[in-house]
Structure formats: C-alpha cells, structure tokens
Image (cartoon, rainbow, N blue to C red; front, top):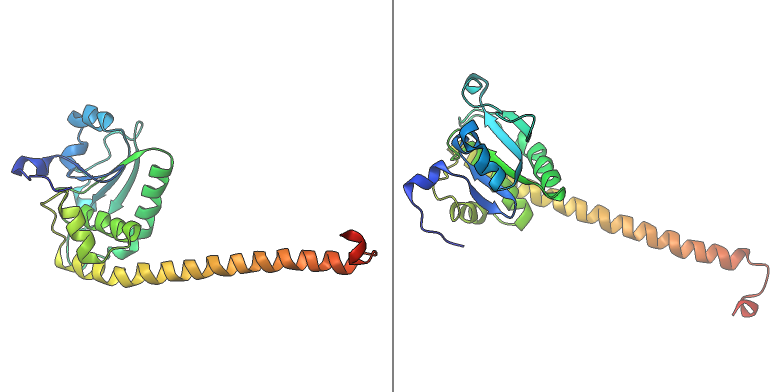
Length: 199
C-alpha cells in the first residue's frame, strides 16, 4: 500500500494497521477532535517527556481513553520497558472494536518506535521489515539511534517470548489430552461390568 508522500501529510495521522494510527500531537489537539471522531479514534497513546507536559497533553480524557507515557526522545531512553504496556493497551482497544492513535510530538521517533515494535510482533517481522512497513504509510518516521538499536534487540526478545508461549500452549494441550485419556482409563478400570458388556 504505497502512497505518494506529500510534506503536509506529516501533520496528519496515518493508519498503519487496521485500527492503529500513527501521527503527531497536532492530530490530537482540541481543534482536531472532529477528525478523531470521524476516524473512530477511541484510544490514544500520548508519549511525552515530563517537561513537555504543558504543551503535549491528553485533551479529551472524558471522551477518549488515554495511556500517557513519560519518554524522552534521546538515545539513552529505555524504550523496551514500555512496549508490553503499549501492546496490551492497543490489543484491548482493537479487541473492543475501537481504534487507537499513537502520537508523540512530531510522530517521527518515539511514537513511531512503539508502532514499529507492535507491527514486528503482530506480523512476525524483523526490525527492518517492520520499519519499512510503517514507513510506507508514514514516510517521515525516523527512530533515534538508541531506539533503532533497542528495536533490533527487541526482535530477539519478542521471538523468544512467542516461542516460550507456543511451548506452554503445546504443554497445556498435552496435559488436557492426558487428562482426557486418563479419565477414560479410570472409567474402564472402575467399571464393575466387563468391557464386552458395555459395547
């Protein structure tokens, strides 16, 4: 889904996955409330540093559900520690039929990194593949060098977590099957009548 990118589009939000939007704070200001409603936005992840809170804020707390994150756009900022909370927030939004906007200040580094990480997991992509996927929809994104490195590391982390989860699911299925088989074994052993009489 390649689109021709025009400079003014950086001031708007773009849909990255069905129901998941990425954009700048400008897309979530009071003057843009109708646009948010028109797009069906029900949830917003607002990413800002504490010193930015006077200018980047949750403008519609009584109408839209917010997750506000304190995160600086610097290479030493820990990104990975926020990703699980963001994933849960987005998943719950989409599961309830809502739509989520993720924004920072410009929608280029912090918010883009969160969305790239989410796309990596949901589509089982590498960092480079996910970056390209998001960039095809919002061309101006450019995570800072620290976030890039953490996203590369996150690829191994999320894959290991998924492998572990898949292994647990397989174990649970095995336990259920053993329990099911055991129940029938118990029935055979406890029955006072010979098996031929039951058939």
